[in-house]
Length: 184
Image 1 (cartoon, rainbow, N blue to C red):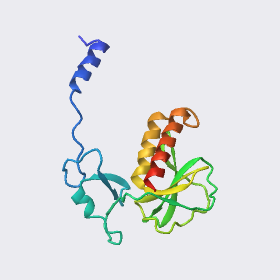
Image 2: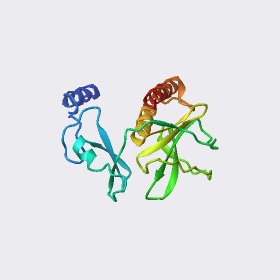
Image 3: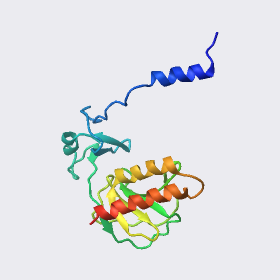
Image 4: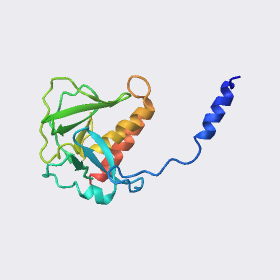
């Protein structure tokens, strides 16, 4: 005799009880808080959570290491008008491919542009760990790459319809407001 669908759902819900496990450093498994640093794995392009000691091991931009620490720099940057066909995008220097990469946040995540448009080099932009966030009608900013992916994740949870909808636009406005404060 099989369970009813409702009984099955109740059993599954009971088995998932309890708080989520604490967040851990992806290098040493030390517990980290909600506010923690990140590393970029240059081989897999994966962002990794890091405790402070592990983060500090990878802060030398000139060392030839597999991992790089994501800095916490927010700064306005002046770019010539790019022919980007969407309202929000970010670009970063991909050191393995030795080129600038342009990505568009959207409901499917960060989508790489395949358009053949010239992308500027940005003096002082740290390869792989910093990005230039661009929004039509707003200043551009150098931001940590994890901030861009945080925005991408937030937009994926609220995106509605073709242009994202009012909740996505509110999330973008809030994000830009925070960036303006941090860039001062």
